[in-house]
Image 1 (cartoon, rainbow, N blue to C red):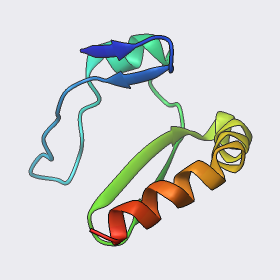
Image 2 (cartoon, rainbow, N blue to C red):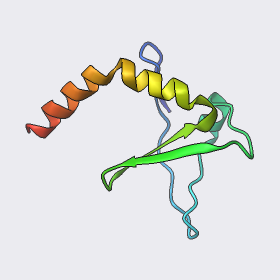
Image 3 (cartoon, rainbow, N blue to C red):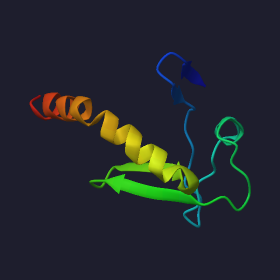
Amino acid sequence: MNIDKKRNKFLYGTTTIGQKGQVVIPIEVRQVMDLKKGDKLLVFGMDRDILAFAKLSHLEKLASHLSDHLERIRRIIKKTNSK
């Protein structure tokens, strides 16, 4: 697990899609995010190759975070697309 506490960013590693399309969320993620059996997750994607999960109960927090950083996100996307 790679943690940048100053920026509140975490890289937990990888997971594998099972035979039935299920994804196992690593124990470290479940502990840090306090995920319990039965919790609802929002699953969303971008294009055909980006997939993200967010606690449904924290959707407003996610939307606010993205909104706060929208200009920075736009610059990153523009820079990436120009390469």
